[in-house]
Image 1 (cartoon, rainbow, N blue to C red):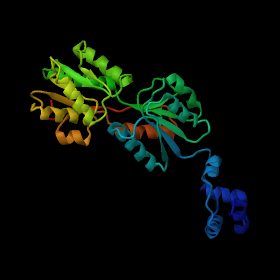
Image 2 (image 1 turned 30 degrees about the vertical axis):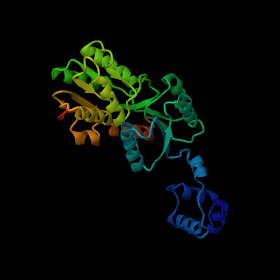
Image 3 (image 1 turned 135 degrees about the vertical axis):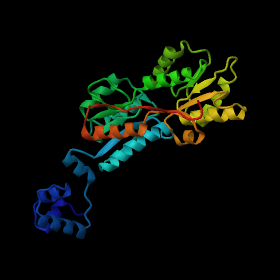
Length: 315
């Protein structure tokens, strides 16, 4: 198999000139560049990407720590990341974590060996104190707010969005409001509980159901909520798929939406649009795009993306 020494000899140039052509350096004459490329083609030479990456000091690859790959919200974040990576000729490597702390740290260890130019954390299992030391090797960017100066982030104000959604329901006359969340121990869950206390006070027994991820979970959550002696008049769901399950259960029980039960979802997803669900849009695709831009630029900037409440027929 031919190597760059063979290419240089046949093309009549130095090894360093071949290296410059492989790395697309500007300061090579057109004549020499064409000679090298012609010989490479004749000898069917395929450059060693790892060697080129080592010379460049970059891989043009970004790792993305993603808890789940079948979740609409994470799909929206990933879509934004991929869009921006494609624009800038970067590759994306998915790093599924399932919120496993050890697995997450194993991925971050890869920054030491320069396997990635940076890592985007869409959602984390570890505390920041465990993550921050790895930022000395390459940029780490978060899709949630990180107050630490070592970490860049693209985020939205979750607490404010939860507060506004609950306040909207209260303004519509609802005081018995239930809600669903994805993970009991997440920062997002802590914020929605805080917002609930601020707007309504104590959470009535049975008015909070966690581990909701999909339409089926929403359907089962609605079943539980509506079996309560004092059943809620409104439900805030942690995603439009979950909200659609709640909606379908309400319809199966011959309940009128929003007269008998008001429903708010999240993330302005197609299923929610189709069912006419009011939703809190955190603009996850934009968050993903900005997170990717920060990683490419090696920036530690904090970029806040605005959220929007889109009112439809379900409230």
